[in-house]
Image (cartoon, rainbow, N blue to C red; front, side, top):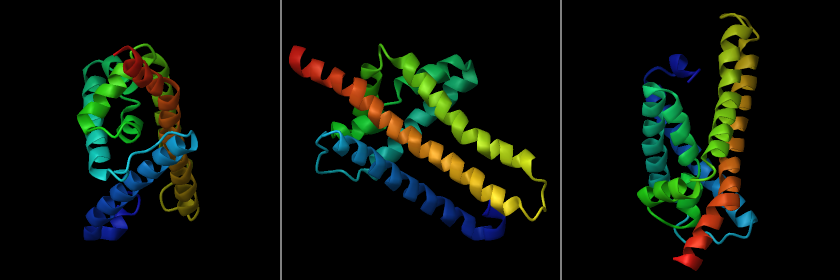
Length: 182
């Protein structure tokens, strides 16, 4: 978004391409973590539209919860933290993935909320700090933009891997218990 003023009309095309690339990267990271742990990922592994839907629905729900009283947004963030990994691991629909995350985090929503908030802060702090680090027009501004954006994206990647790892820890256990006990 830092380049949007330089791109002009092409900025919207850049945003769409960047969003698709991020969704593809998110799918790759989740699948790699799941496969690395020995989880079998179903044949329909590139479910970019479903992943977009999960992000959109949960993002709107979390944003609404944050606008209402902040705490509901944090609660929703914790309960829906495992939705994207569940989408790939269980080969289910978007709404079923959101429900699977809700069910799996019943006892662990606070831990998931703390992880989500920590990741959000690790993503946001470099971007906010960039505003105050170097004044507008300074020659070093491009360097700080690159570093702060790289730090923010690294936190985002860590957050995706953390969600997939948390799914392997608590989400898979809930799915196994449902298979055993019905």
